[in-house]
Image (cartoon, rainbow, N blue to C red; front, side, top):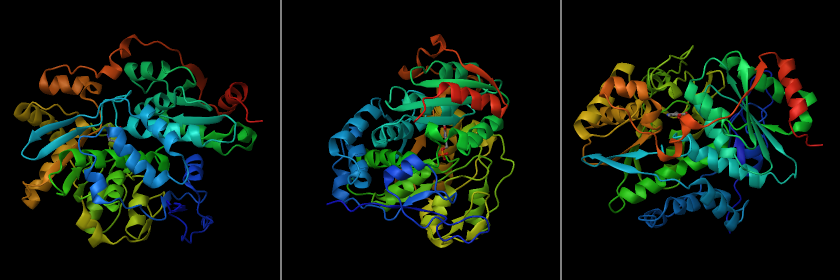
Length: 463
Ligand SMILES: *Cc1c(COP(=O)(O)O)cnc(C)c1O
């Protein structure tokens, strides 16, 4: 029998004025549908299920969905039947996961073949289907998402066609690119877009206000952002699968994960705790260097406002999932970046290496990797690769199996790639028709009453 996994809040032991610590535990499905704990903490599993090494090794030569079943079962077996899980996984992972050889024993794991050519597809698709299955209330769930571009389309595409869930995406009218707008507006079916006359912050504020508005409580509103544990669980799978494909015997691997809000890297940290042989987790950041500075000095200071770098999806000055890393290492940091208790720094340094990569280094890396190996990386993947090189140079580690993660497709950055390499990368098959897609957003002002009026007239009520 599988032991039932319960989830606690990272703020359960906090003594802070104005916040009542959430002392209860919840099931996975409750954590999934709640998103965040009521005390603003993040949900974490009470224990990390351990998988025998031979089960990981047996995935060699097996399809990606087998790895997803192994990891999924370990966390979810007590809450979802084998056949439901198998169907969710088959629907979620219907695209390739290429591993590209680079040099020595180093590889790039390309997580860029999903419907929006971003690694976020992996988590969003499985989470959406889990939500659809675990929402047994019989009432429509209304997901609200504020986006500055890429997250919205990954989440929107992920929920497309999932029964019982409608999605409303808000984006700032004048802050998304033409291609992003087309990608968002053309999703269709149960996914609608509102183009807001305002900035990304306005979109976020509208969504936050709606969540706390009692007049909207009968609409079953929920969020699908990256603090949901349902977005973390699927991000364990690709580390497990990639290791099994590449490892000789039981050799440990070094993983490099370009990091912003640290959800992707957290997947690797959890994979190690499940028993996957991970020698080192490298978490390179762009010029938002709060975490590498912390590992070095032991003093945490968020970067505020965050710095605008080329690898724009990693422009984060205080990563939301840092709270989960601190918790795993016995510490606590809150939503504002205040450290309530220190994590075990020595242990953290043993397992994790982090370094800040400048925009200039990022560009040089794109150029060098292409010229030397004919391997194409975009700015996020370049931060990952450079972080691996820095680690290898410092540690003289040239014999370990190394896997660097590419989180987006180079064709999503045509201007940078053309400027640096003089070539125009082709879109992946999933996005080939992007410039021909059509769809209309609904224009709305940034005024809350307008937005609320729209929701009341258009969302399906739970009553
Ligand atoms: C979101 C994102 C990241 C950062 O991932 P985190 O889980 O937030 O650390 C890196 N690269 C790309 C392309 C992304 O979209």
